[in-house]
Amino acid sequence: MINEWLYYNLKTLFDNLQAVLVAMSNYVSSSVLEFATATAVPDNAVTTILTYTVAVDALLLDTLLITGQVDAEYVFTVNTVTKLKFRTSEQERSLKVAFPAAQKFAVGDILALKVIHYNTSGVFDFDATLIGHKG
Image 1 (cartoon, one colour):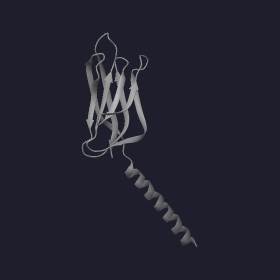
Image 2 (image 1 turned 60 degrees about the vertical axis):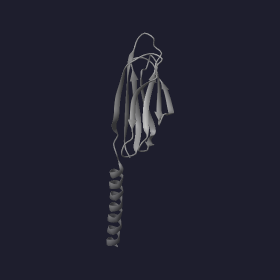
Image 3 (image 1 turned 120 degrees about the vertical axis):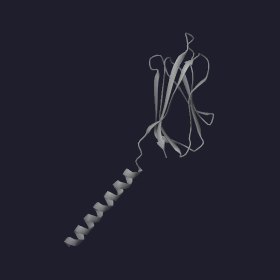
């Protein structure tokens, strides 16, 4: 009776430990994939801030970080097709787009972030960051 109880509990413990190890081996942390700056962007001109070509492995994109010196409209494209548009304001010139589930892109896909602003008082700088991991 004790041997059966011991066997059952040890087997359950082993199975649970195995499940934890598998889950840990599947965990991949995100990191900055690409950072770029567009400087001296004139008004009314669509300007590419960042371009990223998925090279070796599929890409899982978690977050886009975008900021600029003035409020602007941002366009995220995949293979030149517009997928998302965002707008910042004078009160909040930084934007964080955190996808609820990582967005998967295939080898050869070209991701781009573009900006256009309408502030006629000068030229301004904009930054973009892609955060994700290979998948």
